[in-house]
Length: 215
Image (cartoon, rainbow, N blue to C red):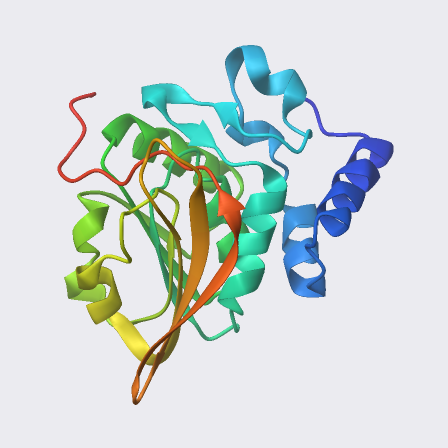
């Protein structure tokens, strides 16, 4: 897809701000990373609309305002290592890469990881490590993480992921039954336990265990 016009980009950023994405660093990252390359086929013309769109393997690319709000809720600092569960199109990981020192992203679909890696390479995003795996178990060999973001809905914040979060760390995860509206939750791990904040209603594909059967 061709580069967006200046007007398209302005409208895109205005839509983000009007829906609550106000953090200047997050907006800057979302201005740097065009959504266009992450949306393929029939829906590429709608890449700069604030709406979720279908991608391969029955998954979706989240609407940009939700990506922005989830990123904002993580409160990432430049020294942070972030784990993303659910690579999908790779768009969220690309945004994170502009804010964090290192991003690890895991997806159960090998095709999605392969296609996301190609875009990361094209954009010269060298601080992203993308892996095929069962994200519900996290990435224990790289733990602990400063921040964890889950882009699929779990019935509860997954225990293995909470265990891989540093004290002082933040996890953002959609929680709820897969066939109803879910709630976006921010979990902060403190020395005395876990603190939970409900952020907003959302709708995500369910977090599934195991590896996808696609190639």
